[in-house]
Length: 80
Image 1 (spheres, one colour):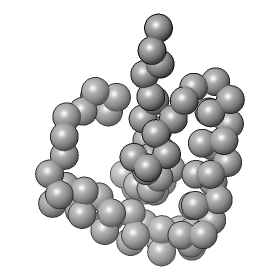
Image 2 (tube, one colour):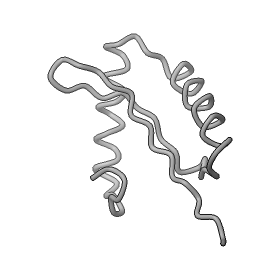
Image 3 (cartoon, helix red, strand yellow):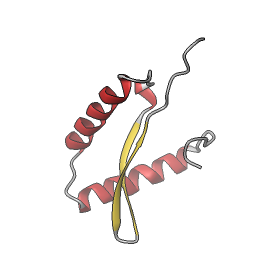
Image 4 (cartoon, helix red, strand yellow):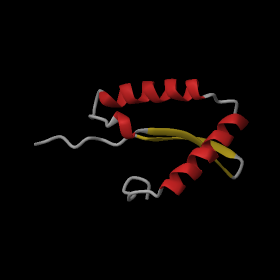
């Protein structure tokens, strides 16, 4: 499950980033555009939840000839 994944190996992260780069090139999606999308989504989510910006990720993945934008935004636990 994506929400509760454990610590990832650096090889898994590197593999996902390479796949993302190749998928981005195939979909003509440049890094600047992805960064803009990431920034806009983080800004929207921060209106409701505190977000750990430094740990957030965005990438494009492709499976069965369909592309998807995957965004990982760790939410910071608020002290109660």
